[in-house]
Image (cartoon, rainbow, N blue to C red; front, side, top):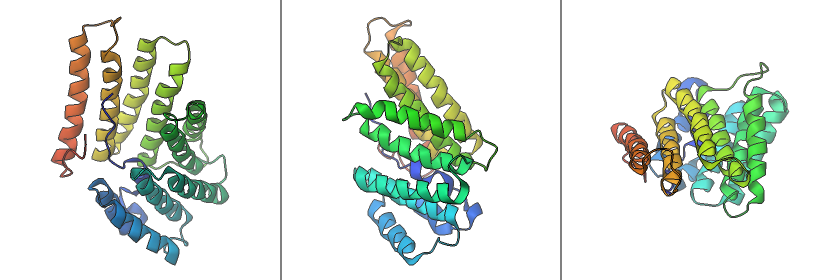
Length: 251
């Protein structure tokens, strides 16, 4: 399978617009996508230690989530999980465990399990379970989900479904077709939010579903059509990132 984009899309989702008044988070998201991982870690760690975001629990949670994503990028998943857990607990204490705001925290927990699902198969079911919780909470009328946070929730659910369904009796083609429908829902959300980085990530995810099928023998359509579909989505992903000034960023 063609590897996923090495962009740090997830932890930055709610930080892409300056509506929350924290310009440094917006800029650190850009720096993150451009590869300044250690610089982002240094700046965010200092800001969190100083209590910069304590007056706003939601911003504090988002800063923790973004910092966690930086550790995720350098494969320090244990440290990432600690930060994501802290952010989830902060969201739960402030807004309640059944709030829409908590949905984002659960999406990051699903992201952790999705990361662990390859080396440890017991995480596959946990990822889908937690991602389902996040997805369900995102529909509650108690609180609200930022448009970019919604993309994270939908993307992690789609990825968790794709991996977990491999252990079921579901037909492989049905599994990938269903996965694409979930990713396309995430893509529509990213498009509505006008977020290039998320659009590129999800397009790449969709491309991977075609790559997954390309090696199978019982294809419902010509193999060349499957390959062309994969290449189309990869190329569109790279095009979006390049046009936005990010380069292909490892796509």
